[in-house]
Amino acid sequence: MRLENCTSIEDGAGGFGFITGNRGDAAVTGTMVFDRCVVRRSASAGFLISDNPTHGCAITVKDCVIENAAADSPLQAPIMFMSRSGAADPVGNVAFSNVIVRDRLDRAPMQYVDGGGGVPLGGISGELIVVHDGGRETIALTHDVLASWMPQIALKQIPHVDISGMEFHPVADLPPTDTGAIRLARFRNAADLIAYATKGDTVEFTVRHGQVGKYAGSPVTVRVTSPTDEAVLDTSGEAFADTPMSFAASTTGTYRIRIDAGANWGQVADSSHPMLLTSAGQAIRLYLSPGDYYIWVPEKTADFGVRVFGEGTGEGVKATLIDPAGTVFEQVDNMAQTHQFEVSLPPGAQGQVWTLRLERPSQIAMEDHYVDIRGIPPLLAPSEGSLLKPVK
Image (cartoon, rainbow, N blue to C red):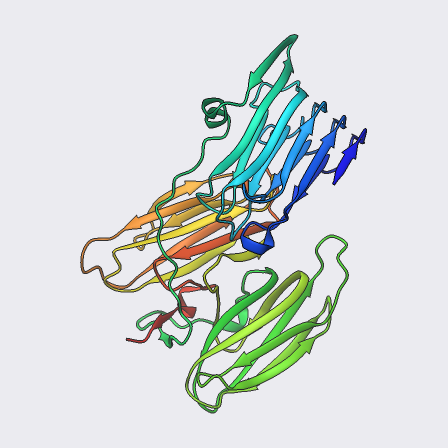
């Protein structure tokens, strides 16, 4: 594909973007050329390259001009690279030739937002002509230059815990909770949840559906399976509405709930039984959900990690991890790219409750944001009384 003599002026978002899959067949191949294109005063990055792996599409940007892109967003840059949740292969494969970057802000002309967590860059070459404050400098995109502009994060690789087939019981000796007054976080697209119920219980809950931007609405699909993997509920809820639902617990144990909200957001607005958000080997995707959330750390856990990050270049989160004594372990703000809270516990540590506080960031928007729990069962509870722990 080739774009020639294209112009973007005062775009409310970015100028030009190339977004593809990252792994295997999900990655687009071939070539993409931006030739003599101009971006002026876009609200975010002038050029965005997302997830394109080094074995993917060969991208060339030549004889182009990027002028005062993201000038009102100093935490961004005129040219952005990004990896999204689930990406693993190095991102890049872009050659720049005679590309002029005019910027009234004193900042690096390139930035990397690593939503994949430790995904490296690769295959970025060429040169930029940077014009700022009356000066003009041609800069070769060497390894050292790219490393100074886009330092790559190094995260301890803590594996996910697979909870498929795992049974859970309520955590003992915690205060009872008025679960009907507690609302789970809003999730984006789809979510997996678990709930504990006793045989003969009627589990009642309300599924709430809300709109994101101008995305069209469609029925919300809900499926619940029993501890024996029997479907006890397979239904749908009304788009952009609250839909009461219920199912009868056929046996005592862990029930698994899958809710698909399409392109929009969903939420369990209230429930007769505690429900916890979970994930299968990936991050939990939330939508505008500040609040305190609770994590059970099983006994004898040596290390665990909690990753937080935002979406794209302008959405992030402020996050605080709080230990069982109520002391702040660590706090980060304006996290668009991945940050990992890394916790090491002494040998033989008892089971304990940690709190993850999510807040609006101070300088960027809070819309889509993610929580990725590693080294322990990935369960996010709305209260201490809702916590579940794995059965030995």
